[in-house]
Image 1: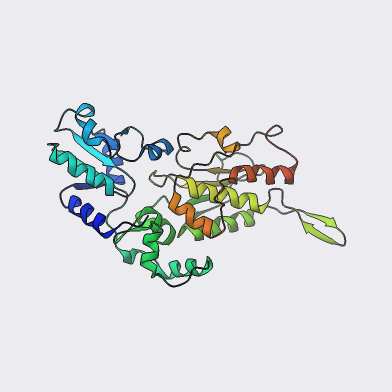
Image 2 (image 1 turned 180 degrees about the horizontal axis):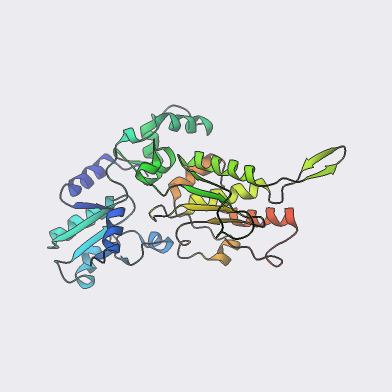
Amino acid sequence: MQHSPEFLKVVNDAKSRVAEVTVDQVRQMQSAGEKFELIDCREDNEWTAGRAAGARHLGKGIIERDIETAVPNKRAKVVIYCGGGFRSALAGDSLQKMGYENVLSMTPLPRLKLFELDMPAVERHREAIGLGEEVDAVQLLRNWGLVAGETPTIGGIVLFGRDPQRHLPYAQINAARFPGTDSSVNPSDRKDLRGQLFDVIDQAERFLDLHLPVPHVIEGFQPEPKPEIPKAALREAIVNAVAHRDYTIHGPVRLFIFDDRIEIHTPGKPPNSVDEEAMRAGVHVVRNPRIYARLTDAGLVTRAGTGIRRLIRLVKQATGTGHGDRDSQF
């Protein structure tokens, strides 16, 4: 979403009075057992799609009305979060005016600068998806919701950061090949797949190509490759994992290859309204819409949200098995 100059002016004015805290600092507070109230000030649909553990919901439209009932002690530490740290700053400013003495606005990242972004990578993406040059790269990133004012968002760093893992260490895939069927043994090969998101997806595909045998069948006069799991299904699973993971959780996506299966583990639970059966039925809730939009434009996902159903269909066609024959976990 592109924010208007006047809105940013109001936000920056609020930020000048409201102390900020990063996601990492809030997690450290939680780990240390520090007492504080964690308030989610986002819209109802955002709260329903997923929220931080231990948070209570007081949307931006009602927080001033209900805060004194929810948190009567005005000396209590209150941490407010939204998505990009804008609404939380505005809400925090209001609470301070109401007499709350210890209010913090949670920001996804420290205040990074535009130089943390790889502009040549942005231009390559623009060219790859067929966009013209009518809009400069920075404005394009604002239009895509990857830059807020002069600050990159989480999505901006994940997709186009010069060094994404310097700011988001767990925005990576840990890949491993285990001999046999047990992950308790030492892997025969492992690799941390790092870099910008498109590069991480490419590295995962190469790791799978390296470790998955591709049997051949004779059709006509030439042997034809016939992988047990179609490449399109593997790509769908990898892209789904990185598109819908929770980037505020300190944990990587994990890709494990065994003799008899492939496991992909994604940090965080599915959005709150989605379970395994809902995914199989085609229910589609996007956790990271700005990241998902870039992957869509690159042709890696569809806006229809049929990835899991397509994955199941591809594997069933290739192997002749389905959920009734073999237990599939997502």
